[in-house]
Length: 561
Image: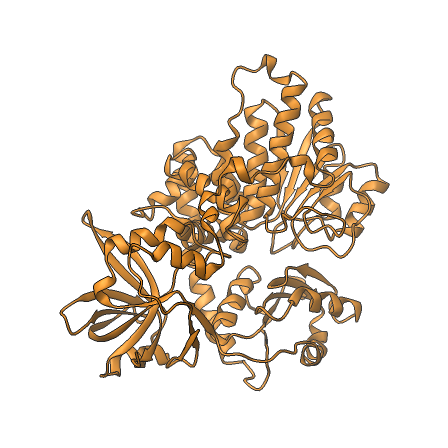
């Protein structure tokens, strides 16, 4: 494997030295990812397990059926991100389709924080409560529920070190006693599995004899796809099938609210990137700045006027979120201690709904584990963490709780959150100095191949897209285009740089580098006179019904090939 060091100090690992063109690009991309041709055959039929293969799924399904049969009200309690919103909406749509009323609630991020809380358990004590995308670490809340004879079902995918008592059923592929290899599923994927099991049981119990239209469960796959992409779980096997089929439902405009949101962008095509970079941020904006109810209402409404209003409301909230985020990132950078191998920054006045995005931006920029802390309205410190591959931040949070530095928290290996007294922030930093240990490595790009401009055609890019959808576990192909120079460049919106790359044979390619003004990448693109190697992702853009290849530039190196 050949390595190249770039102007930015990152390392490019070139996966193949083979000559690549449209005839062999698919095979090379599969080989680079360690996949066989079977990867391309991810279908619902050959990927779906029996729902009851998950521990406690049968218990969950039977208890939901019991509530339906006995006309017990059902309450869905969920998280405020896209996975939580989508999970709630799958249940709401299914219950609506079978004529069953249910209610839902989402904790307000700004006032209540994440997960189950005792006030909501008390409020819905006469209901069967189904907690989605939360509940696995709610030991106190589930104990309270059991003590007060409130039945709670948990359907979640967050990491678990123990199984809390008090729930009727806990469906979570991360249970310590779970044997099935479906730990890559998000909560919405598990909720869909639950609905499949419930639908089967209702059919077996002759529930559908008095219903004119039996639910079409595949119509909920758009919601599963949204959550699967936005929760950054691996896009292979069942998840790949979920997203492929979910994108078809989105393109068919089955969901009115989603269609109205997309109408504000008018994408030439809808892909996993559309979900990740447009739909997801807009749906999340409600929960970050106001209430996640806006997203639930958008995804479940059947009223055209309401759908337009809700879509525009989320769109405007997301623009506001971007402005807040930009200011917080700039302030955070000025606080960073470059001598530490992690980032931990604090401002009591930062917006609690945006600290997670800011942590992600800083982690990407500096390639270090990052913790961003602000205060809630009660003055309690709220932290959001993003980590790198060789530092499990959830284990560090757990240890911080054990030592009494952190009050509560949890999450995944690469993303977590916690609460603490702001008086403990100095102790937290000292604790992190001892706990965050790793050999620092420069940012690495795994490059699929080096190509020249003559090879970069529409047909070549279309062949690469046969491996879509792209995301975690199946990243968008990265190519290095060699022997080019920047023949034209201009700065856009004081942030981005648009360029034309040219070679000695008159071939050209348009490219863009986002958020690079004021960085080393800007200097490389604007001031380097020698030929270059340019790293990035190829795509197809549509303008006035004309398709052309474009290049998303990520890095630049001096030409040495």
